[in-house]
Image (cartoon, rainbow, N blue to C red; front, side):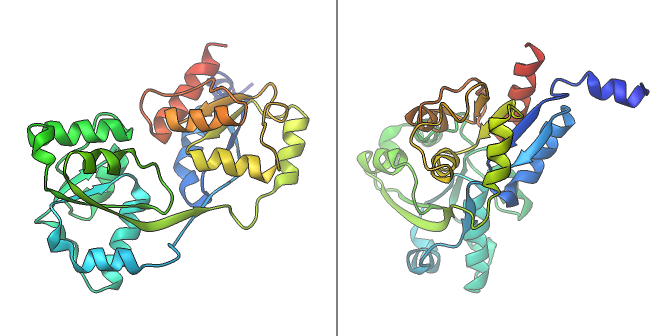
Length: 274
């Protein structure tokens, strides 16, 4: 055995096969992290990120950006599609300089900083409850949210806790669709099913609630227990884990930080201890 082969054999995911259900366009970095731990990665994208059905609300918000006090971005997708639309309408990112900006997650904050957009708040917790708390703390209390104007560009379908909490605190918040998540047009179901039935998968990863529900839809079932029997289930966060539970699954692996690198690390740690 060569030194290189011996080194690979000692990696925590050596000999393990991990299925990732993330959108193909966003899967490369996550796959690379798993491969660096020695894993064999099989792609089964269950979502695709596409433009919203209509840009009307987003366009109106961009044209009236001066009327907002805060911009909240909850993902890199929200940043990318928002900035792309700004450019299409002939606007420059410098127009965001007068607004406060909240970015959920280090990756989202980094994406904004890469295009010279300042970031005022990066919540320590990724969940909507944590975002609200971080905003209140930054402003000096919940009462300081009253009468502020927030713009939240996000997925067409998303959790409503944050908009409701801000509204209850007296703010005006516009949630506008910047993009949609849809099932991909092509996924090699037969290959994935053969691997699962043959016991060739050690772990499956879910990085959003949509990846869980779309995976179940792909296999036309409301109960994934039989299909994923013996497969470790890795979920990126609480909301994804709750959706997995709706389909009969329990999360065997869940990182404390809701990011893809943290999920890859948690999977490696889990198998290193088996």
